[in-house]
Image (cartoon, rainbow, N blue to C red; front, side, top):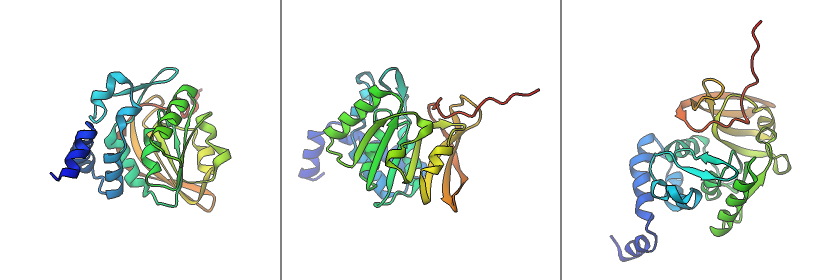
Length: 232
């Protein structure tokens, strides 16, 4: 280990854990995008979780962040794979739906031109903005509002990342994509499900079509669920 790298690890006690996370979790889950790997080695996930979960920040264990109520963050390997499949470009204007404390948006801030983190929990949105400021992420902004409505004031977006499991309510988000824009979301097996299929949606000719990518699990975004079906 070089002196410079050794100094870096000494100054940041989590640097080694991030390196291990990428090598043992991210790369082994088919996240071959080197830019995504490097970004996940850089962003300090420990500041985006509650103090009680700091020691688990770089594991695949369940970790929480608390705003008005506790929220489970998406596991790093799932999030990393979603970013890889999104094919993030340096010119992308991105939106994270269900942004929580801002970790996904912080990752995107180093990959895209700009990113908006949207959440319905004002306390989490404020926490995300404070973390962006702390990390000097001038191209990342946190806003509060209904997930179903997206972030119309900042639209259109080249890329939308939905950070959680959904079963419906994506219409307004699709309409906020640019022509040729992409959206990645985990489409649940049933309302309230924590498992589903990570899906890449693309916008063309004012229509959005989806392609299944891989099986995934994450917390449910209850604001984005399909309406109940009544059977007579």
